[in-house]
Length: 397
Image (tube, helix red, strand yellow):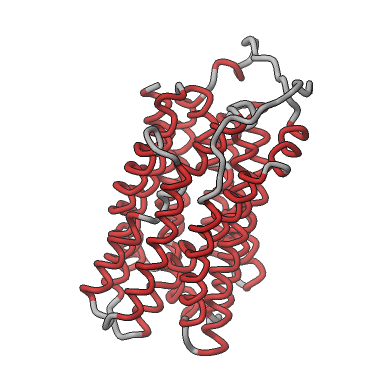
């Protein structure tokens, strides 16, 4: 268990850590290339949507063939995408590399794949906790990598910084060897499949609690990606230095380490729907207060700490609820489907941020939408039923 958890956490640290710093590239790239903020935001929106689409495919592949092969493919695509992000000459190529390639790479190197391994390899009494540890690792990656990425841009320029990261992300390959599962290795006996992927999907979409979790995850994606990508520019527009934005994103990552770990641990002892409802309501309150108080470095840092504690803390209880209801056999696939909703929200959050800024000169409308959606997500998570689903007869593959 220790090896699986350590390697899984390290993969998420690297993959999510690099991703969380993409907002640092918005102004350097748009200013150097003469592009609008919407151009950059659209590529990031495509990335999030591609991550969601390929997350379903990657989840099905990980459930059937094991996480190892999926992680290797994801690492290679990540390296190619980052190199392409540095060298794309046109907005179209930028959307293809930054959007499609990196989105597909993230699908194969983050939560759906890693949580599938954890779900299959770790006992139910420690599963929610282990997912909290993995999510906390992704948050630590943000705390670790965002300042590093800021310094790389400052010292090397944005293009060379991306090329350095394209080499660094290949470290996922040796880590993948620690996540090989005996049941998926050549010649090993594999557990019988009592339900086909199609039957599992049909069962899930007919189950109201799965749809409620999916709706909540949509809101999560909208909020965190809008804030993560556009907050550096929002702060600079209001006269604050880039260092404030860098420290703010790092604080989000640092406090999310604690938030995700606590959420995962609490999920072992109390209803996960209550944890999720609290997180979404608290986000709405935090954003409201942030917009009402005078903007200063101090207010930014306080907001970053609070929102950081709520940042990815939805991930462990959401995924633990899915496996608690449906079991582990198709967990990566079902996590991929529910995450697809997250990524549709991410697409809208990041794209609307750029689009409405270019149209109105302000991010205000998207901030207000984030508050309203937080209240909505808190409400829809309250009626979720967490009991294991009852299957009258198994559906054979």
